[in-house]
Length: 365
Ligand code: NAP
Image 1: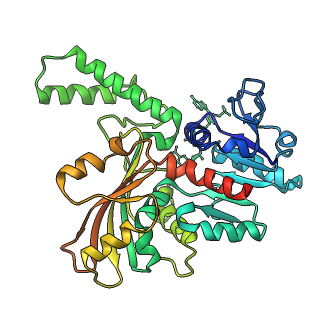
Image 2: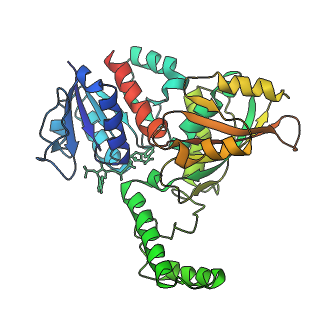
Image 3: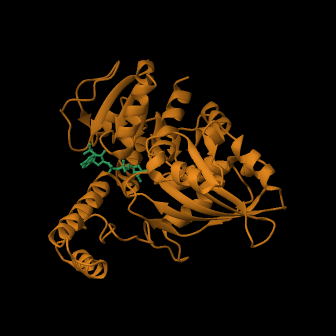
């Protein structure tokens, strides 16, 4: 039985990965060991064939005993530990949620519903590094899989509405803390009119006491149109990832342009995206609908009517679910090759944990 080490299982992505692996009885197929940078010596999650004691995630010798390592710990950890392991001659499989190694030539970005065949080829040919894609990129590719597969797309512009939990556990808790602060301020002035309340809330948001250590700014009652670092192109790093990662996953030699603005909003879980899709040739709406609907087991086409959209195409409706709905699909007035669409997906499931779970099972086969 292969020895598999898990690092980052306490975090947002890691916890969802644990939940999914338990639900699918994955632990029965491996011997599991749990590592932590802060909880070594503690009690590990109780799983079939699991080591009950948490091991030290900062000890390369302890890590090197594994046949495979699955990290949901973050990019800084990967940058520190992964090179040491390889330098010391560790030849195991490295499966990672962080972006650090995604664009390396010797890594594959994994997204089972879209590139399972390419992953199999890589496993057969001895590739050792398998990295989950950026959450919005993976969710967009599952939603638009059919149109990409039929080579119908000239370019896509994606305007994102990304949930607080996409930035990690501490950020999600901070958003709730911000909302509590806003709620407390509202409770002190129940009789104020709307405009007076708006002034009061802005004073609350601007206060030095307002909790913003992780986001750096208020996200409650606000949005933040910049995610990740600045690049010389004027894009944020999150925006840059869309084109490079999508094309790497699709295995395109001629890249399809994908660009837009990435925005953090105060949804708790689930990323949303408004899409402008430029097709190479005009196509009838019913053809586009059918191609999207039939592409994979996870995409769901939501009819473009108000009631169904507001019921089924929101972060609150999609949270904790594996399907990826896409709706608001309609031709645009911009021209007969332009389509509008809106998609929502759980960024902790197909956006993060599920591709890792799938590649782990595929590798164990
Ligand atoms: P996270 O929630 O911040 O967890 C990372 C680590 O922080 C944990 O494994 C844990 O490590 C430590 N930690 C400290 N305080 C904690 C607390 N209160 N609760 C839980 N863990 C705590 O990070 P994440 O969002 O899962 O992201 C992990 C990686 O996946 C990142 O590279 C991220 O970019 C990527 N990713 C995230 C998402 C997403 O939606 N969040 C989507 C796709 C990819 P120790 O046990 O060692 O202390």
